[in-house]
Length: 286
Image (tube, rainbow, N blue to C red; front, side):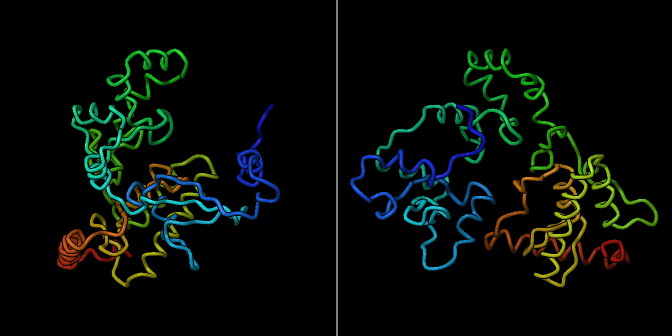
């Protein structure tokens, strides 16, 4: 049987709840528990930040099955909270995390998931270490797996645009201004580098949306290198997003920073702004 689309709760519900008596299906209330946390990604943070009405942040009703809710009991837990609970309550956990520790990966890098995709491909090298027998099978069955493992930590796969060096420099992401150019021109240049008209349109819309969001939040200018302490936007961060081709909006700007990070960004932002005033280069950021 071929499945043309992802099944919804409304269509598979009768099979999951077939043991309910009489007219229970659609009348009782049920909950599907999910271990998603807001700290894991900007997209997951949006799930909770966008909640409206009288629902608690950790309860989210299905749009097509109001009688069932998605429950996120650990939505506000940090990585440290998870491991404190494991230690305190003696919970079982995957021993792969012990191997992650031995590889000296940070808590944020210790993720178990599908090996292939835009983000997972950057962790392909881990499979060679953690599961060499399975890695050999991947090489036989997945075209391009070896190439992805070789280059997923470089700028070719966008690694440099996510905070790691990847053997690149800022100049590889945002070239130096040419005479008569502004930073807006560099953004247009990055967009026009795409041959696909659909990608050009998508990246142009994204750039306009992020610039507009910044302008709606503050009257302070977008600086070349330092992210604004409120919006997280700089011309460099915007060009990184465009070069990465983030059509799924997985690499949005920074999450809401803490007090210490905000103070640091404010200091760095003011310093760069003062330098540009002294150099008389503010026109380049308009």
